[in-house]
Image (cartoon, rainbow, N blue to C red):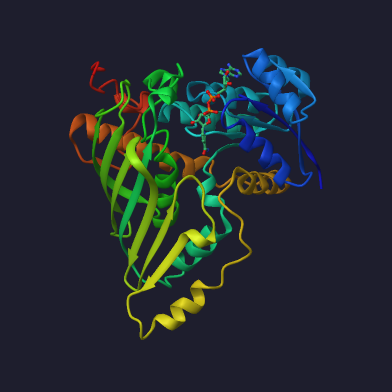
Length: 364
Ligand SMILES: NC(=O)c1ccc[n+]([C@@H]2O[C@H](COP(=O)([O-])OP(=O)(O)OC[C@H]3O[C@@H](n4cnc5c(N)ncnc54)[C@H](O)[C@@H]3O)[C@@H](O)[C@H]2O)c1
């Protein structure tokens, strides 16, 4: 099996998770260089994690290192351009969320995938825990019965220091508030478990933080399987929690955590204690526990590269989540129910996540 050479761009807060991800591949991937426009940050990071070469210019790094994999952990506004440049240089990409600023940008990434034969996978590490694979297979096999109702809450808190970083809190550079930046993980997880959505009605507001983007959004969703879901995304909740709850005919399935989870974070309650024993027996067949880490996702990307298959969070799956988030903003800023498939080229929300319709920033 081929071993892959990776480079990292962006050596800030989440950079270490990418270093740990490379370690998790147990030698299948080696990190040969890292890049940051802040030279001290790049050098300190490379010294700390024993990465051979520090760069300060992304394009030069691509030319010099000729990597197989590019790990993108720079601010969101740069993701689409960096992903396309990496694929044009012959590399596959694992890019931090949010992958890009609009469906139009997503379509450009997909065009580059077709042109180059490389792929860009959006980081959605919640999908890759082994416990999730188990729960999802039970759900798809109908073990819990028909999915009926879901609750999907990202109740997080971010302080003023967090939003003082210049790229955060702005449409152009962060690309959105807790819908696009934080809740994106659990909403993507919900879509992974419940499948195709058909319509959404949402609100978004800036209630607490002095930022341009929203700090809370709430949505009501209908799925193709008939199920309904309610969603809250926020960065103003002092007691933080990530909560995903699936109520099906035969059981309630719950996942409670904050930024990462393992098997112990799941709970299943059978509807009928008389038939619950079978359900419990199926539930308890968890595989060896691999948490929802960047490493778990990178291992699957390596498998995709080995077999030249499309990563789980590229293409249609990644587009579905981005379209869903775009629909939340469109519904919030137009007061309409937005149907899946309705945001096409020519719609202001196709080229800008907020359709240019977010209310102007009000100084508090
Ligand atoms: N998957 C997750 O759980 C998770 C968690 C946190 C952050 N993130 C995402 O990771 C990304 C980075 O977030 P962060 O918190 O690490 O931000 P950060 O501000 O701490 O780090 C970003 C780094 O990118 C560097 N940078 C800026 N422009 C650059 C350029 N042109 N070339 C090279 N480097 C450049 C900055 O100097 C900085 O060091 C964001 O998209 C964020 O949403 C994901």
